[in-house]
Image (cartoon, rainbow, N blue to C red):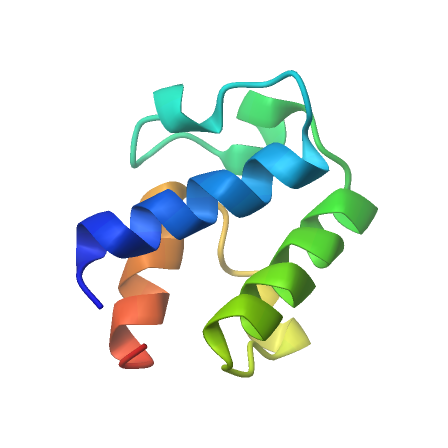
Length: 81
């Protein structure tokens, strides 16, 4: 899976936890929680949904370090999804 495909999946999953927002408009360096006004519970639900959709394990330790679209993309590319 390439970076563009991963970004589409991330945007789709973010749209589910932040309805009415436009996650596709975020830059790679924008903080997702601040940019989409989501709380830690929404962020947890996003990472769980992303894990299930991509069939990978994202540890809670790693979730706390993934704050931007760029960080999430690099992490997922490193997981070889």
